[in-house]
Amino acid sequence: MLRSWGLAGFMLACGVVVAVTRDSPQRGGIEFVVFAVLAFLMSPLLFPRSLGAAEARERSAHDGRPVVYWRPGCRYCLRLRIRLGRDARRVYWVDIWSDPAGAAEVRAVTGGDETVPTVVLDGQSFVNPEPGWLRQRLRAGPFPN
Image (cartoon, rainbow, N blue to C red; front, side):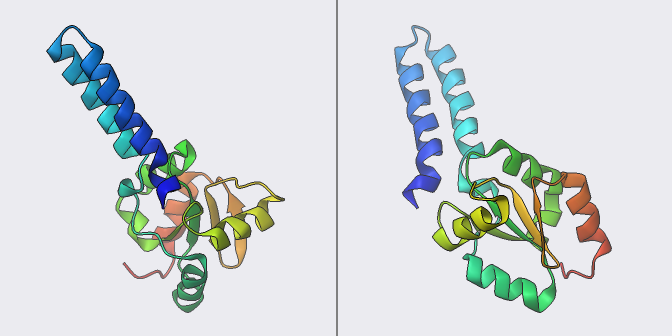
C-alpha cells in the first residue's frame, strides 16, 4: 500500500519544499499547486478501485470484461486511463504494487518484466496496447456498464 502512494507523497513533499523556499508567496503557491496536481496524477486516486488478481480473473471469467494490470506513476497506465474516460469503469484494474499475485502474472506474460499496462482479454495478453484499441473493444463487446 505504501509503495502505491510513495510517488504521490514524494511529489507533494517536493511541492511543500519548493513553496516554502520561494521569496514570493504567490509563486510558491502556484508551484505547490503544480506539484499537488502531479501528486494526484501519480496516485491511485485517478484509477477505479483496484481488485486483487484472483478476484479480477474470477469476475472477468464470469462477465468477459478485460483485466488491466497497472501501477501508480506509470505514464502509459495514466494515458490508458485518461483515454478510456468513462469506459474505464468497464475494466477490472489490478495494481501490481498492491497485489504480488498481479505482479507475478504480469511477469509471467512479459518474460520477467513488470511492464504495464498489461491487458488480459479473452484469455490473451496485450502489453501496452493502444488506448483506442481497448476503447473500441469495450464499446463493441457485450460488457455491462
